[in-house]
Length: 387
Image 1 (tube, rainbow, N blue to C red):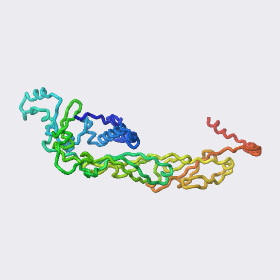
Image 2 (image 1 turned 180 degrees about the horizontal axis):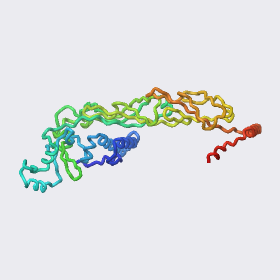
Image 3 (image 1 turned 180 degrees about the vertical axis):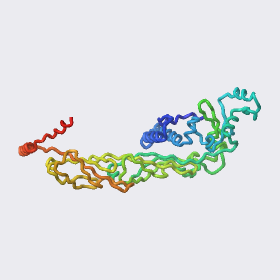
C-alpha cells in the first residue's frame, strides 16, 4: 500500500501556488540539494529525488489535477486519462461500509427502477460512464527538464565562451535501449505479486488500481538487469555549453534533449542553465550599458582635458569640458555590451570624480590659496536657496 505524499510540502508551496511559484520553488531546491553540489551526502541525494518527484507531478496539469482531487497520482489515472475506469476490474473500493446507504436506496425499487444495483462501485461506474475490461499499459512520457546554475567571470560574459558542464541525468538504458525488458519469457510482477492490482489510500478511502508496472496483467517480461526494468539509468555526462557574447547574470540557456530521458522511447527533456556573472572591480553593468567612475584632477576638471578611460575594448579618449563637476556623466557610444539577440551594442557611461590635489610643498599650497582668492564663490550657496 503506497503512503500518501504531500508534494506541496516537499516543494514548500501552498496548494493554490501558481505554475510559476512551483517552478521557482523547484529550481531553488534543486540547486540546494543537487548531488553535484553535495557529493557523498545521501540525505541530500534522497531529498533531491523527492523534489524531482514532486515537481514531476505538480508541473503537469493532468497529474496535478488528479493529485489534488484524490491525494495521489497513478499512471492508470481516472476517466479522461485513458485509464481503467472506476467500477471496472482495475478499480475498487474498500475501507467503507456503504451497505446501509444502499439498503435504504434499494428498498424503494429493484435495479433499473431507481435502485443502485447493490454496490457503490456500480453507482460510481454509472456516474463516470465507466468502461469495462481493457487493461491499459502505462503511457510513454517525455523526460523531465533539468536545472543547473553556472558561474562565469565578467570577461567570459562580455566576450562569450564555451564551457564544459558535468551533469547527472537519467539516460536511456544502453542494455535494453529504454524498453526495460531483456529477452526471454515472462515472470510475476514484483509490485503487485501477480494480482494485477495495487492498493492506494486517499484519505480514509482505499482504492484498488491497475498495477502501473505491469499494466494490470500481473506478468512482466524479464526485466533488464542493467536498469531493473526501469528503462533508464543514472549517468554522468559532460555537456559543452556555448555562452553567447553579452550574457547577463540571471539569463537562462537551453540545451535541447539534455534533460532526463523519457520513458518507453518518449523524447528527453531539456537542460536549462542559469548564468551567474561575477562582479568586476572597475566596471558595472546595467542592461547593455557599462558604467565606470573615473577620477580627474582639479586642473583637468577646471580647464577641460582629453583623458584616457578604460573600456571593455581597451583604452578610449574622452573629452571633458572646462568646469566639469564631480558626478557629471559622459557617454561613449557603442562602447558597452554587444547584445547577440538584437545585434546591437550598448554604451559606456563615464562618471567623473574630481580628486583633490596632494599638497606636498608650500608652492602648491600658495597656488591653491591664490585660486581661492580668484574664485571666491560659495559652492554651498544653492543649498540654502532651496531650503
